[in-house]
Length: 231
Image (cartoon, rainbow, N blue to C red; front, side, top):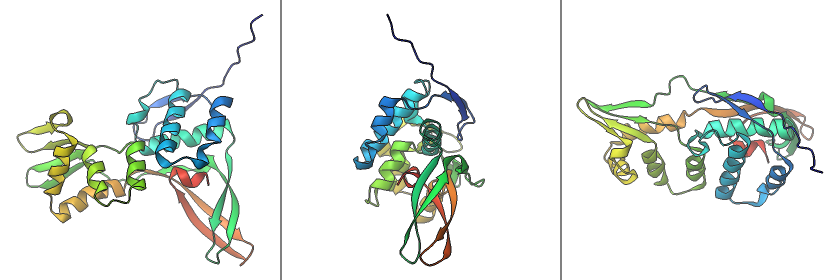
């Protein structure tokens, strides 16, 4: 006699980048076991596992590899909250040197957006570019690579088009190397303007207010970035 099929609850959330509603399910036991091994993997393997799990848990109905970095972080926090529980214990560093064990509720995390961010950047006269949000893989690559020139590689990948008054060069008309060569020709002030798009990217944050029992002081800090929510 066949064993019974178990029903898995589903939930909905809204993607921060597009306001699209998606459906997801919690981790199953096999996925939870994979999650338990993530503490010892390198950053590239971590990004691969996270995106693979999100792909499965969203029923392979969204293109995970093209999602913005903060979309992935937001989905994953919701998955973790619904699958294992919303309470996570983290270490908060006090200026006295003490590491404070502090519980946070993942449901209190929020997406912070800078209203001044604009993907369309006018560089000079009639020349400008349109940018897209970096993906989860690209942001991991940027944060994990200490090579200062790596920013050019990431930014070049995120150029959707280059335009003048007469022409729009779309992404399928130029390579990453072409885009990188283009960026190298900008003045420092122009490239700084491009960099501001990435500095002001939406991010998932949570404000923390802990109490240090060693020095009897309040410690206020803010968590940013997925890795800081799971120490």
